[in-house]
Every structure is written in structure tokens, then in C-alpha cells.
Length: 173
View 1 (cartoon, rainbow, N blue to C red):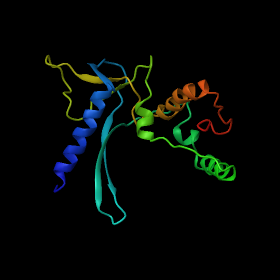
View 2: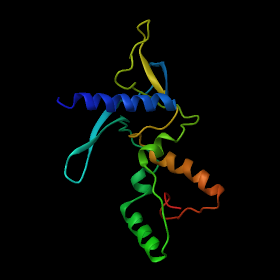
View 3: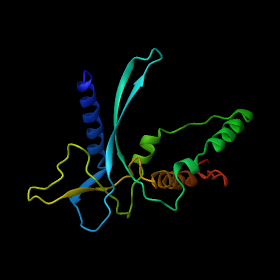
View 4: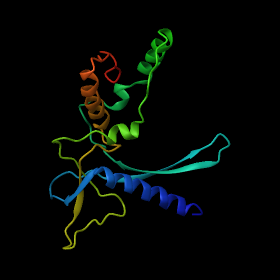
């Protein structure tokens, strides 16, 4: 493609960020354990005239397994956000939103063992020909529990400062 250099730069930028944060550790791929597939998602940002201003590449999980935990859409539903915005306007309050991509990536997996495929460009085999995968140290976009775990992690910090969670909107404090 004519934008190949821009996409390559965006990919390298993404991988540099992932490596710098220690998002995962390369481990031998265990037999019999679930390893979640991953993909690279490609997106562009455009200015008001429709010109491409940024090329974005994100490494995402492809987690299709059902979960009993609430997802990010249940935590911050459209209806909840509309009510929250109405309260903010009515009370002349200020609010701050967080960038969701960094929200997940700043949430440690703790003692949870989450194995995913290595991102493209990483060797899938070690020098002896054994398969490898990634053991996540932080949550990855696309994992079903990422939204829930990120909100729970964030809640621990907010509760230290006496913030209280709304009962009907678990992602709002």
C-alpha cells in the first residue's frame, strides 16, 4: 500500500510501548491450556477535512469465551452516562474522562494467569523449536474481563480518597 511506511511506523510505535511497559513475558506454550488468540487492529484518525492525521495499530485479544463478570459496556452503559452528564450539568460540576486504551493497559493481572498469542513480529518458537506464547502482566484490550478488572483496580485507588461508587452504575464514582 502507499501508506506502508506509516503503518510500519505505527506498528513499531505500538510494540515499543508494549515492550517498555513490560506488558507480557514470553513463556513456553503449555499443552492443554487455553491460549487466547490475538490480532492487530488498524485504524486511522482524520481531521475535520477527512485527511489522515494519524495511523494507529493496537494489539488486541480475541476473547470469545463467556464471562460471569460485567463487561465495560455494562459498567458504563449509554443510559448511565446520559444520567451522569445530566447531573454534572445540573450541579455545575467538572468531570474528567480517562483514555480507555491506557485504562486497561495500566491494570495489572495480579495472580491471574492469562496466556495469549504473541504479537506479530515476535518469534513463535524458541531456538529449540518449542512453541511460545505471552503471559500477560497487564490486561489487554479485547479480553472480556478487562473492563471489569480495570474498574475494580481504579476503584481501589478512588476509595482511598473517599470516593463512593454509584450502586446502579458500578463504573461511576
